[in-house]
Image 1 (cartoon, rainbow, N blue to C red):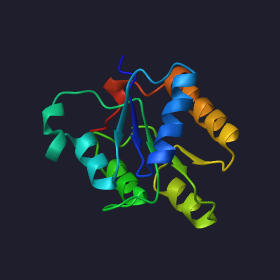
Image 2 (tube, rainbow, N blue to C red):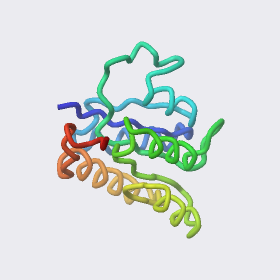
Image 3 (cartoon, rainbow, N blue to C red):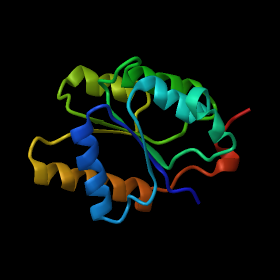
Image 4 (cartoon, rainbow, N blue to C red):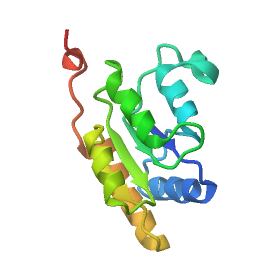
Length: 150
């Protein structure tokens, strides 16, 4: 079974911390990183620069920032939920935002989780590690045969 995590993060420092946290709990065996919303969509729909990913499995989970260049994280989420191929793909919003409206919109648009990035280094690493363990090792995804309705 595919155990890839797709990290959609434009902040290089946050990316390094997230990858470090996932390595700390042995979950960094396959983390693909894209830096903006358009790259995330191209990766997931196997288009543009990621057209060579044809027939590749979807990631186990998408860790999605809200504030992204080109296309916002919330717009990425809406497009994922509108497509039968990705409508059930687990998406965890991982953001610096503490805005109640961002959290509400994320859940209304189909996010599976909303996690605010802690400011303290140790807490940041621990939060990301727990998030990775949950989505990769604990969560039971929907059966593929029943994932789409006719």
